[in-house]
Length: 611
Image 1 (cartoon, helix red, strand yellow):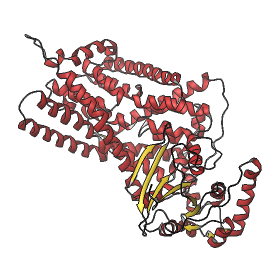
Image 2 (image 1 turned 180 degrees about the vertical axis):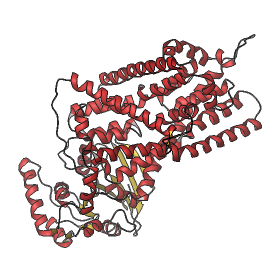
Image 3 (image 1 turned 120 degrees about the vertical axis):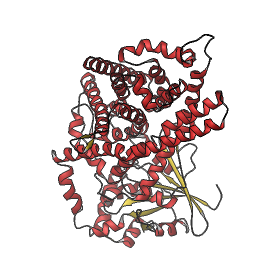
Image 4 (image 1 turned 90 degrees about the vertical axis):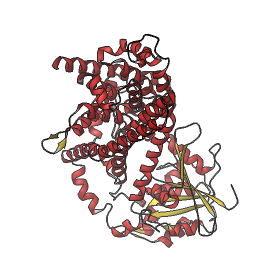
């Protein structure tokens, strides 16, 4: 690092606005990776200050204390103290605190100060504090703390100007490092009380609008009704908003595939480009709008401050099935992807509750299942209105998500009754103030998630799509062959061998074959089916090909299979890293395979009988 580059670590309690401040300072100049050897996310960005100095910002995981109880908190503590292997210590620590909740946040500020490193305190959300009548004597607070204090409003353009000016100047002197023992930790509470009494005037502990909204959102009856309506509308929106864009992208790739075929001579290369690339990759890419719509609503709910309230509201229900309200947010994150959901369980301090959440997180319907759901629902479920308002396809999609939730609750209930420790743990968590999500933060969140999907598309999915094209094309049919060429390929032989296992649940050999790449990444099942059917000569479109080749009973069975099927290899790898146990990996894979097979068998047999 050059002498003109200043490394700054952003730290703070969860919900202090630290990430919003990071986004405002760095914008799109960010990179996200993991710390070496762990699954904790490392977020880094850069920006150039008015003086020309390059400022390197590290957004560390939020923590309430350096008395670390989770990998996130341990890394924040070790990086700030300069003890993390392979990570240079920061030149400056910017501690971000919520100005509306200094009673909670000042204790952590004092812990950071005791590290003996240069520190600047950023009082964030100052506009909200003023609206609530909170008066903070900033000069007096700065004098008593013995470190620079600046005001910021992370969600407003120019709201970080004072912070930029301060860090662009001379690095403040560090306070002497202090020992961390039981007596010094107990003394922190007394110091916080003294600081609040001398520097803060607060007319009331909570905002009027928060109390008014919480009377409804936290109500034991109306709160649950509101939560159910919110989640139902989210899944309706996935189809109502995302489906037209998905159709447009699908038509576009079909048009490009036709023109590419016209420009190339007939042969294997033409088949690879049209059937493998445009047919396989294009089909999966078409579902990106629906995935982004789902991500959009999850980000908005998180940024608004509603998710912790939903966790609190569901705590009693989740205790009945052996979980805790803290499990709600990791499980909700698993609707986007099980991997960050499993990583999010690090906030659950009890090892037993954390393991239970990890094992059922893959049952939440992740976005990788969405392309499969959208394909089959579009092919077999008619577009009609239910009760004159709701889209039947959206209702079916909601039912599949609900099936995953009910399955997770059933598994949690079984785990609760077979484990030895049957004690329950009280839920203690902070409920942040309600706030309007900012377009900038939502856009950055969507961009990051879309980039992850595109990276998978151009990496794992591209490779598997080409592999599926190869085994579906070679070897060529023998002389005198009468059936379709694909039946004599490697794919045909593999698929027919697997069909013996999956025939009782209604899967033909093409579907059985598609389950193999789906284990690497679920969404590749769509690309695999597209490649197999297009290579096999079904040029009328994958949805129409499926509708003509398999029965409604088989389609319903396949939908249920993907609702409960064993998760992808990446998820299993994260379970291994988070639990340090192959036994837990085997348990997770085994119970989901049995659950998926049994549920699909029942659905297929009942649907076939009714048909």
